[in-house]
Amino acid sequence: MDTQKIVAFVEPSFYGVDFVERAYQKGCTVIAIGSSKDNPKIYGYENYFHDFLIADIRNPKLIYNAIKDSIYDEKIDALIPATDYASHYTAEVAEWLDLPTVPSVAAYTARNKDSARNVYKKYNVPSARFAKVSSLEEACESAQSIGYPVVLKPTNCASSQGVFFINNKEAMVQAFHKLREFKKTYMGFDVSRDYLVEEYLEGPEFSVEFFLKDKEIIFSSVTEKETSDLPFFVETSHTVPASVHFNRQEELVEVGSKAVRAIGIDNGPSHVELKLTNSGPKIIEVNGRPGGDQISSQLLVNTYGWDIFEETVNFYLGLPINEYFPFKKATSIAYLTAPKNGIISNISGIEHLKTNPSVIKYGVSIRSGSAVKVPESSDDRLGYVITTSSNSKDAKNKATELINLIHLDYA
Image (cartoon, rainbow, N blue to C red):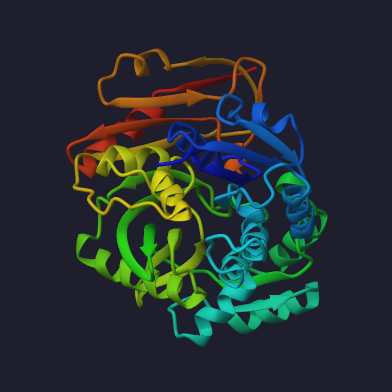
């Protein structure tokens, strides 16, 4: 860069911390915009920013005012969403400031599952049958019309929060009452009082990681997934590239790209979740961001030597984007979960991770005395191990074997 660029990020957290680190390492002046000055330490980027602006990120006008009232007014080169929940607000503010951005209407559609389902239907993107409901009566009627089993979920949440597998009316009644009590999600965002009842899609689950440049796909990679036992949908493993259904991966990419374009995302990253059903790939959802769960920060980087976070920063700054990403080696992540609810008295089996040559990263977030439960959302996972190998099947097997060697003793 000829001159130091000023890059602002809205509420860096979870996957968004990688954006902050990449911009900082590129020599940019990094401005974080968030709800609390405690957040850099909470989310782990306290060493990767230069200034912090306080704003209620749940309101685009307040994000805009925080920038206009600061010393950075008319000096910011890029405004980048660094949390899923404020992505559409960030895009809206960027439009007001005449900065590069994904169209705010596309970001809004990706963020709100009911709007996305309507777009898939309009443009004939293979997807689940669905109904938007706001009452138990409507939910039961819709489930009966679609046919059990169905999935009940909020229209605007993430990380499998509030997602229920429902196979009869009694289960619907119980789940709907629980969902009504779920009122706040991450960072104080309100959970929508509207819900989706969707056809349950049978088949193995995948995601496709995309990067677009001027509406053209310059990067795509299929991620194989494993999820927890029903009735929950917690992701327990990711492998890049996928080790199964090699002859169907082009179809997954094709359907995923159709969904991204239907929503209107024309630049930058997307994380598209699908199931490979008997009638072909069908969309679960499209996220206008890099894949989380270390898919983008670790698995893609290790597998292709290509950093989607750095290239996204390059897009927003109008810098050249690297379009070369040869396959180097396969990578897999497996998550530690609790087999039952209780209090942990001891954890064993971690020692072997330190010296295993296939392990590139691992972490365990619990200790003796921690309360654990059978996972209902991604927040309930307890740790992970990331492994690498020359091929996907071996990388996945190693990650699974190593995570299974970790033993939890209960008090």
